[in-house]
Length: 240
Ligand code: F6R
Image (cartoon, rainbow, N blue to C red; front, side, top):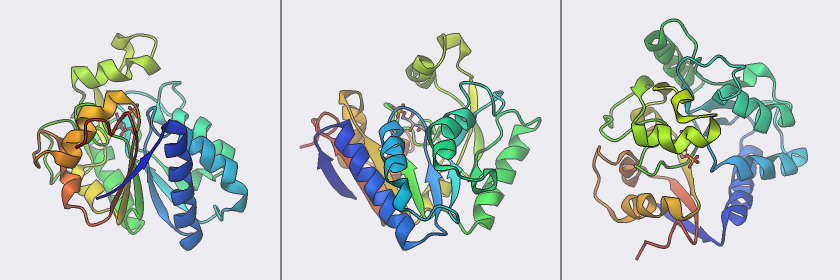
């Protein structure tokens, strides 16, 4: 795993956006895996700033996850998050962007459909990841199988608590989500993991120095051939 150490969240976002931009220029038909949450917000802003010089009409995107029960236009859905922060500003066509439907009648079926759609696109070329304080990637919580494909998950109380800041109250945070599986993520050709702030210190230390275990899902990345981590000083402050 290559680690790029930066000063703060702003520098992390600039570097991440340049890396994504370079990948898009290299391969205009690229399939990108995207994340939500607080971590990639700056990256999306920087990406929009440099979008004028990028060929965007052929790329495809697949997001990692979506909350169960939320329709695409729900203010807290990841559909809405992506539309407002990236897809609309970049003027991507609806057919270029993909997220699992959290409001599907049969979520298990929706998970299978989404997994198949990723495979049919040829797989993810570059997957953007954040990391949960408990080591989750996507919504693959501790204990998830390293062999998992896109599936329905129960969110841990600590994850619902961490994400409550995006909702009116913690009770409003859904209990379930649909997420790409760990095996799905691991098939990406390249992975770009971002971490900033002291909240991520323990998780990043465990990722870089801990042992590999399903109790810390991100540790699976130790086996991936092409991982780039961009992390700021605070997130790296526990690493020896
Ligand atoms: C989001 C996702 C999650 C987040 C993680 C960190 O699509 O899949 O794994 O990356 O929960 O969230 P933030 O960035 O809000 O600290």
